[in-house]
Image 1: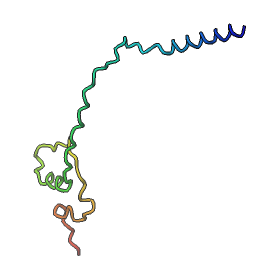
Image 2: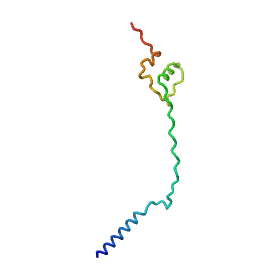
Image 3: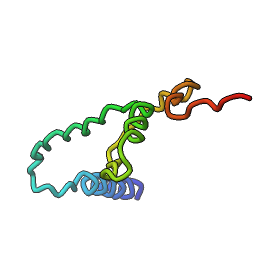
Image 4: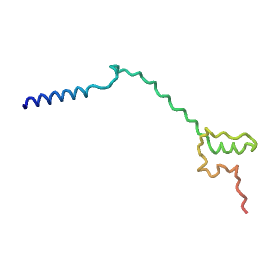
Length: 95
């Protein structure tokens, strides 16, 4: 009886391993077409000096064309310069 249980257990184990080994379903064709490389990211536009840009915008006449700011990238370079806009906003006379 013990031999019968051992052989039945061996057959069940072999069947389980055989079923686990089956699968994949690729039809025997393991080759996959290589994918083309991803395109590089678009180049970022160079940052424009905000001080220079704003001075140029202020210098334009009010009746001019609107300024296109869709792709404008600015570098806020005048943050640490208290005199960056001195010619646009003159100091008030002291009395």
